[in-house]
Image 1 (tube, rainbow, N blue to C red):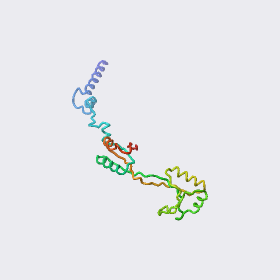
Image 2: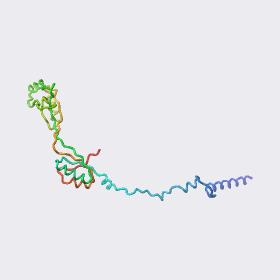
Image 3: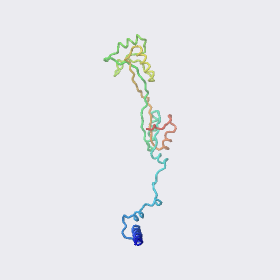
Image 4: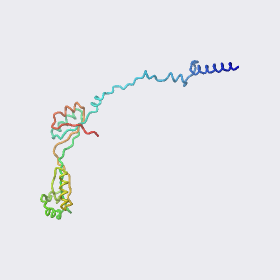
Length: 206
């Protein structure tokens, strides 16, 4: 009896296996054999990137940035027209000469008489009262310096001599020259920027 039961269990398991494997046909949508047949086959896949440009080609398409200057007005204008005419772009900025002015502002629109007296008393002779109409009328000019450090040292000397109202202002004087920031294809810029009076450099990275 036990042997018969054992054989029945074996045959039952075999029947279940045959049915599950799909050997009996019929509907098997959603069953494991169908899923296995529909699996992607990696060895038959191919990734297509299209016509992706090489890095050098990408650089040529995107363009590069160069800075050059200072250049005189005529040279800058000629370069501007050349680059823009070849599809590039140009941004111009004027070049100013900076100086640092040391002065004592007018008090109620009048020269600071007390400071003038102190200046004379302590030996400062190089000063004058501004007579030109404008915001600095009647201010006491104590010197114009090319370097900021020199202007600050002058103020420090004045303070040591009891004159604490001196100030420093930055002045910008146009030079007539310009700086150019240009964008365009590398080959075009290399040709356009050759032979200038100033050496072009790469634009600072942001």
